[in-house]
Image (cartoon, helix red, strand yellow):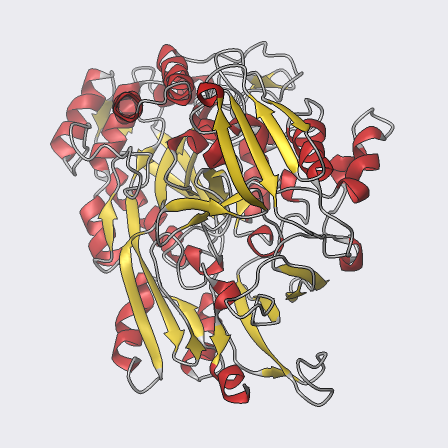
Length: 611
């Protein structure tokens, strides 16, 4: 989430996404949102933990409840949110979500030279990995040149760093042990915003890049999977993975070599243990919170009224802020490719999906006001742009808007050659208009949304079959098998629009509505429409422009085309709401960062009493 680009929200991003330090790593990162974490914090003590001040003292812990297992322990291969890397890894820079600006992270400073064509980053002194080994410029160079820019290792970060129409990468080299030079082939405005990408340990991973398996693939692609012994995982963030039990929990321990200290010179983080408790039921997490066993809870609309009534006697505070940086949407499979000699989408359905009149009719037929009022309980806003409202490039007016209008929806369907026979809609060839709408299982909000959309579309004669899949299975369909018709999912990202190139570049890893083959594979049968290429070109142009007014105009035009062509039918941006027990001290709630964006400096009340 908010690491360096857009991410697929694996748990369906809802208002609590930021509770996991959501946007602390960078300004531009994309996530596919399938099943947002339910966050809870417990001030209970570890009876079996190592002591903090004496052998008898127990260590206070923070417990976050999430809906599903992590997908990987390899940060370079992760494109989902939530993920463990917001706790375990950092890049050269990170975002201060409160100030909405970049601040130093592993790099203590940087210089921009030669009119923006050359950057010099200087690492902090005495940086170390969690195993005690020095972290130097060699690690930074390895991360970029050997991993992110490696054509044999497809990573979401690689898309973000492609420069210009030819997709060239920067040149990265070490000047000395602390300084790194980045030279650009041409001006690339998002460079600094993208440098929150995780720095990886060369001394651990170098051999996995150079050694290959029987297929000639780098071993890196299967390194640090979920079967890895946590003792073999090395991190540079404030925490390290201490243990992992499938479908039970991930325990993070304070990284003893983390660089950051407080104003008194004490090492951070102040809370020495952080736990992901893997709980498949949000209702169960709510019960634990209400009974006092948990101290922090990400509030979705269906729980808001109940918790608001209990706020005073429950010794917690309900924090509210503006819309979160994620957005939900419906999208259709526009691919005309074949798999194993068969079209991935039935040709007659593909003809519907690729007709913009059909997509616009769907947009007009979805009652977003009812979605907001009934499912979000009024705690959301209509979303009419792929950019977050916090972004300075967000276009607030002049975009096509698809307010609920069944008459207009029916008119568009008629223009496209559809007709009713009774209450059922048919295309001009006599095929009943029926498709499967898929979302990820386990997210009550999403499941309620697809149910209402099914009802809405039935009013124009369209039959929708609902399918709920495990997030990993759904991602495989979107990325590999292409065996899907329509989806309801979400993305989360930062305020720098270039992170969206992962979605809007025709060769982007998250160009999921018309997924191109991976680099190196045959493009035969894959076709990109003119408007897709135009959007892709605009994102390139935006990255090549440093003048802010020009960048806003470029991304404004991209937003206009996206809203006209509707590869994504945007729905709702929920408001950010979190319930935090008053015993967690130092919370500075923010829509971009949530309750835990400054986790490293938070303390539990019992810690203050012990000092």
